[in-house]
Length: 232
Image 1 (tube, rainbow, N blue to C red):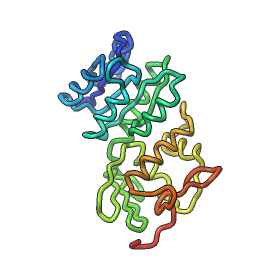
Image 2: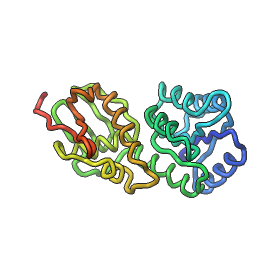
Image 3: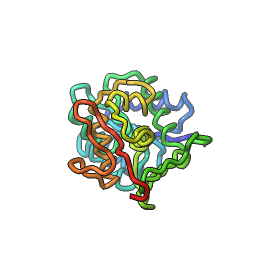
Image 4: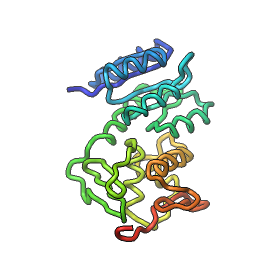
């Protein structure tokens, strides 16, 4: 059964363009042209991925993402104008997995959709699938993280970042290393996106940036997953 993508943009030409490219790549595509329509289609069709324009009249893409995140951790890719840096950061803090700036290549957008869906899926035959650091347990095969047995709700990108840095406790990772490590390249990426993702991971873990137990800021460099005592 093909994976499904919901494309939301108030410009019909952009929607039609993306529908054509995504369908040619084997996806089932749903479409909407405003925020309320997007939420209605999301609730009815339960797509596997959401491609969402930020700047729409009425309910904008950020508001749609807030509502979607209350019910689902499906991958979200934002479409943004190049000048909207703060919108991109806010979107990432809301739990978006990626963003593509307008004007964009439809082929690149399709590649991004494939990448976020690949990251969101289970990993079969993964080496060292289960990692335990103190009370934190991460299973790369099932893509589940627990703290003291309590499951965390992480997006695909948040999981991949945590899976990267948890493998080497104590190591200081630069933002660029993290960006390249979880995405496979430095893509359009923008190292400040890592700050937004780390903020969300900390929130999910109940971690305090001022007195961290799990993820520590390394000033002038980036972040590290802290050494954990067994059972601590």
